[in-house]
Length: 243
Image 1 (cartoon, rainbow, N blue to C red):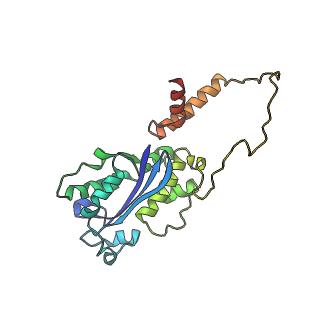
Image 2: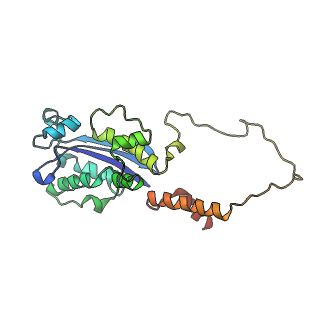
Image 3: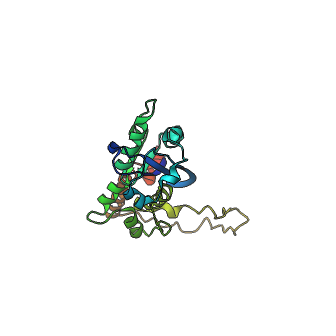
């Protein structure tokens, strides 16, 4: 499963008022593991950045003056996200702006949701934590994700932080993956002593799960299947064994 954790920064809040995208950041996950591939571009919006937006992300008009137009990076962006599941915090906002930018291009392009499925982590967090704060900063505190480098909003940094939050929020499977710096461990016959058991030894006792335990296990798998949009690994592997 290929996912792109995505974030944007904009000149303001309303594309209908002429506000534009000024930064796009995306992080690629394959089977819930970061691949190291990412997309990051600043965009010249051809208009002024609102003071309110500037206080959030700190991206100035002078900084954006020599950056490419959205039309110049559109094909590269679409190639990066095409066919993936997009993971976005407050997805309607980012998708609205990206669709607006695509709609301005000379050649008609499909809308984002015609190219990709979309997971809104804000809606997911509100479902899991009703009545609580579910901003990205609040989720970092709740799931013990380090966001100490985040003084201002930035699309790529927020996408990287959101990737960690999303993985923790949907099962915490980040712990299953070794860090990039870890050396591979090779296990072979020369790395340990082989102890051969007697063929006459008593057979090991098999303890089967009780009906109550099976029901509880099924409930957990149902929740994982729902959170992963039908991609629960344990269900998939069990089905493969049956086939």
